[in-house]
Length: 93
Image (tube, rainbow, N blue to C red; front, side, top):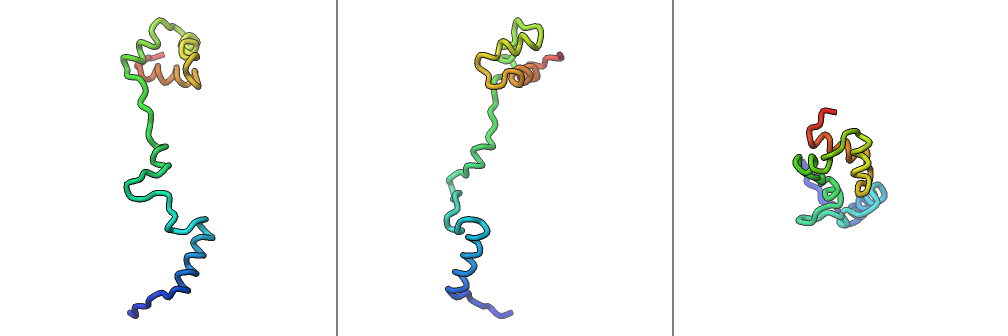
């Protein structure tokens, strides 16, 4: 097998192709060693309240409407939050 070295014109050509296809040169990568990528930060899940806290929040509510009304003052999506708290607190229905 013959070892061939790339000359500068070949490297420039391949760099140009990569830039056209991917929008930026390889050296301008946003993620470097030790620095988290933006996508990694978005994958972190919020844990939310514990089972005990979820039960305290929903205490005194009978129907789903009551639960929604109780969390509507602070939740972005009250229906989803009420359902999630019910699941977290192990409500059957």
